[in-house]
Length: 361
Ligand code: FES
Ligand SMILES: [Fe+2]
Image (cartoon, rainbow, N blue to C red):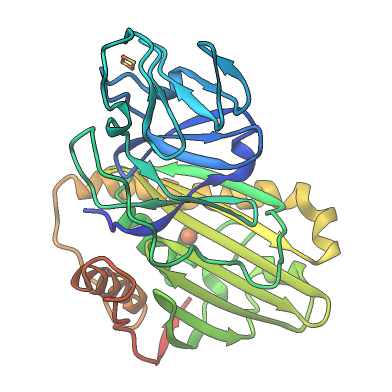
């Protein structure tokens, strides 16, 4: 159903304050994110193995605090029902109801641990193979790392907008990489009009876990690029499972990086987060103008997906045409290749070949 053993965008790092927990359903699984007072983030399955209570409803006990007469060497999440505590490794650390003599190897009681990375203001989560049992062996370490945004150093995004689309992740992803919907769906004063449609040709090549529209001068009929001034080049890459990165170089003036991440929450809902990083001072002043623009842009896509949902209820056969849907075809081929490679970076062979695609938009 969903790709596994791969990094998904979880949330902006700023969602998770020190000493706090955050509950999210990702790929249909309940997850609790926690940030200890030292700033480190960890994530566990958000279900107590005892009676299934969400751990996020309990409390996060800080490293160094004294709980039940013991000083903790690490942050621990305490279940609100019977006070079982779990460490960042997912192992049970305490069952307060046990009395002396009731020996039990409590460390063998585990909740699933999800590897996480905090990177450039984002939290990424590694979603391992699905498993139904509440008691699990420890998760193996990831065999690759999440994507790094180019030319922005350690910066966090300056602008973040997100929206939940009521669709399966595949529809959100192929909507994202669909070059032909712009003049119709984004037909607002902010973007481009049907009248300015013209033929385009873009060169593509394979890249890490996906493909890249190679650096080129962006379309003149888009207002967003106009704001950035002249002498622009842009490169747009896509990588599994649903990460699109647009890197715009504005001559010697600086860089703009747009990260669009698409993360399945459930079978029928998908979170789309649009983040922007920039090193270009002019955009700082424009931020109040840009935010509603990005918001309405996302909403236009979300509204279209909701209209599409009405048709998809009838389970129609769908089409992918050349060349405007070739990126969508590649997406499905990339997914197949991921499965064929056993869901491991080492087994994955990128099926995308260099190509030049033409369409009108
Ligand atoms: S349900 Fe969590 S400790 Fe009992
Ligand atoms: Fe769109």
